[in-house]
Amino acid sequence: MSEIYKNRHAAFNLHVHLVFITKYRKKVLGELHHEHFSECVTEVCKSFDAELKECNGEADHIHMLIQYPPTVQLSKLVNNLKSVTSRRMRGNFIDLRAAYSKPVLWSRSYFASSCGGAPLDIIKQYIQNQQG
Image 1 (tube, rainbow, N blue to C red):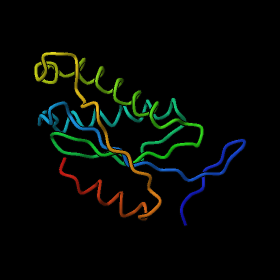
Image 2 (image 1 turned 180 degrees about the vertical axis):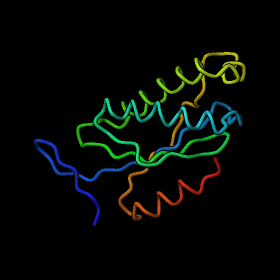
Image 3 (image 1 turned 120 degrees about the vertical axis):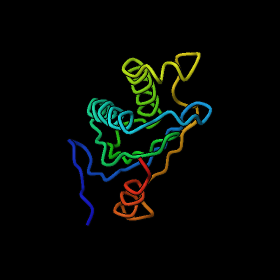
């Protein structure tokens, strides 16, 4: 059975599968970028009382599985994740700054899917099997 999370006023089991795509779908992300991205996302998630369960991707996109409480507004979490990871990654990696003429990393669009239909193990396995 899935783990049930609790706070003062709710019991919940909310997960979201997010995908961020690099601007212009440029293949600029490598293994070190993915590692640093995971660290940044873990930190941002903590500030939202959320938890990064899985993270992986390819050169032009990143998949995440995040558990979050019902008090979190998903659009605010996504905007925070995008702005913080973009700023920090461009600050730490010269190659990402050189890839774009403007201070950007992510496309304005993103994919979000609630994870209630498929078992979480299947989604975790899917994310783990992304080429990184």
